[in-house]
Image 1 (cartoon, rainbow, N blue to C red):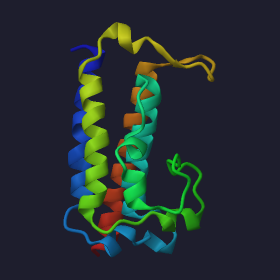
Image 2 (cartoon, one colour; image 1 turned 90 degrees about the horizontal axis):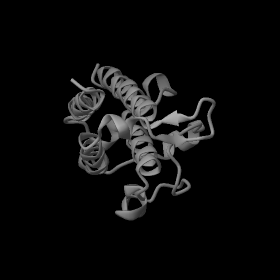
Image 3 (cartoon, rainbow, N blue to C red; image 1 turned 180 degrees about the vertical axis):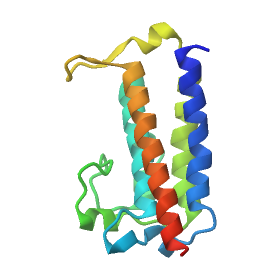
Length: 168
């Protein structure tokens, strides 16, 4: 098994984690903040999709789906169009809302489908390509992709935990 195969396997697991966290919930349940201040499921899934979208766009040299496929326009969030949720205040977290689970999944599915396609086409040479010179040492594609899936799985787990609180 190659490193690209391992990445493909890791990325293939994320859709089930996300779906299990959101299945059957309504918009109010998705927006419920555990303990009154925890991140709600809608924010967690939106954020993990936005991070995946923005990081893949930068690493692979394409535009973010959030911007080019009209998701930012349809969602009409009172946030900067390039916002991924990093460093959000409590009010900004509250601003991330959807009308339905399907709206949330439509964006996640588009982003993650593209991510899986891109990961499936990689080889070892691709993975050693430097994608971010702002760090010391510079970040390779392999390191960036591991970072993205690590972050996404953590947020999917947080969403699953929040689901348990919402349904308690």
